[in-house]
Amino acid sequence: MPPVWVLGLESSCDETAAAIVSSEGDVAADVVHSQVAIHAPYGGVVPEIASRDHLRAMGPVVREALARAGRTLADVDAVAVTNRPGLVGALLVGVQLAKGLAWASGKPIVGVDHLVGHLLAPFVRRSAQELRPAFPYVALLASGGHTAIYRVDSPLARDVRELGATRDDAAGEAFDKVAKLLGLGYPGGPVIDRLAKNGDPSRVRLVRPMAHRKGFEFSFSGLKTQIAQIVAKAPPEGEQAIADLCASFQAVATAVLVDKLVAAAEAEGIRDIVVTGGVAANSELRARAAAAAEKKGLRLSVPAFASCTDNAAMIAYAGACRFVAGERDGLDLAASSIGVLPRRTVRGPGPRAS
Ligand code: KG4
Ligand code: ZN
Image (tube, rainbow, N blue to C red; front, side, top):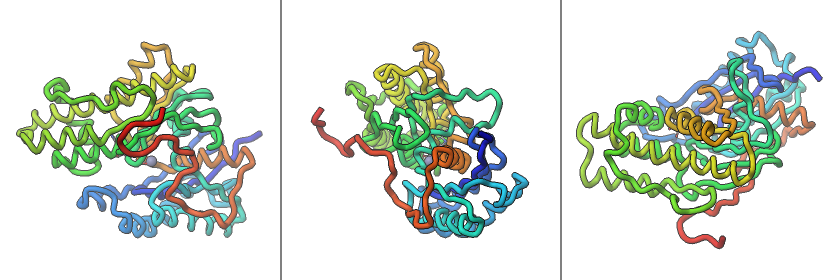
């Protein structure tokens, strides 16, 4: 069967994106308009500002993606759009434009769960060298809004099972909050990554969260509180002290993510592992995952940088997989803040039944 080509739209948070990708993962165009600069003064994403900027940018971004691919709507087989989970007012912009495009062109529409998009990101082909995982694989998805480990048996949401998620903050949220505490600006992940390179991770002792707990759940709010207490007691003075604190935080956060991923793969008896989501752009996380995979004989796939943070190529690819499997949505497709993947981890502190 020849590959199908899908136009994908993404507007779940603070990136307005459109891409044209085939069911084999080939990318004809990939356009991302980032809102980071307009949210930066507020230290985080402001939902109404996000919706208004998506409304302004979405049309031109789609037009640019089609122009870069040298195609028109008539040349694509379907329109895919992120319809969950995310900020509803932001999702509505992409969903409504996708419906308009589908209606005007007579093409089918497929809704995509943003998290499924992240989980399939390693299939988006950005260079010939990228290693693609084989099903089933165990994936760590660490982003600004979500952190969990999944077993992925096929590209379809019904074949994805959560093995453990964070009980409180997402890993990326912890990077962002720590950066805010240190006055480093937003988003925090890339700045901490850069500063940590010059820091000594052994200078500040931090208690590792969930270290003695079995299972694959995470907790990052306590780690952030430890940093808040250190900063309140003795604010780090000078570049080196800040770099040391960044390095200590990053070492603990990335070690817990990688250790649980490897333990989950071993428990499932699966050799293929994936690290994905915005935090997968972190250099220490990538290095630790590569070292652990080498040591344990696991096959690690990490998406290219452009596929780690929010983008529409992963959405177009996930939509192509649904389309090829015969799945379609109607013009009544709704937006939702809740994803399709059933959540098994109970939120909040305290003991668990098992
Ligand atoms: O996947 P993403 O673009 O958006 C969500 O779906 O949340 O992830 C954004 C998150 C932010 O919290 C950002 O600080 C984090 O990914 N991030 C990083 C790095 N680059 C982005 N975290 C650690 N190190 C990085 N290099
Ligand atoms: Zn995301």
